[in-house]
Length: 216
Image (cartoon, rainbow, N blue to C red; front, side, top):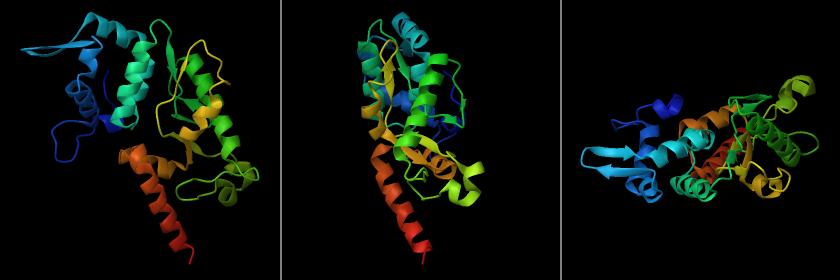
């Protein structure tokens, strides 16, 4: 895996990247060794053949986990769940989708991610309008219905996965509580500052206070 974007940025006051920090955290807590995916040797940390097979089989899921700003415990738990799934492949439901554009080439992931986005928009909309849950920006109020309808991004509080052979509709109700509609600006700020789920409510509260003050 090769880090890009925020994962390739050098952390403030450190000599490594955000991506390498996440890998190092997994390494230091024996998550990879415990699953038999890596071993410690005198000359360093080495991936095993099982680890190579694991990465090859679950490359989409692992890329999703490492490219988002999920808390360490959520990442560790997801890796354990993927491993426990055995031969059943787990598909990530990605958030990197906006107005029908999705990075992944996996058709199933693309279709399910797009479907979840549409369900989330319907769920969070009021009077056929949806606002950013952080700053309150309403695209339809500003741009009108023609240009602003459904112009929103969906942030994932925690990793969202589904077994490849499971029905998507069975999981929707439990998934919605992990979603947050946000404008592109707030979404960028969340990811740029690596605001995990534990800190997200504080960020939302701060943004709403700033919004309330600006209305006076």
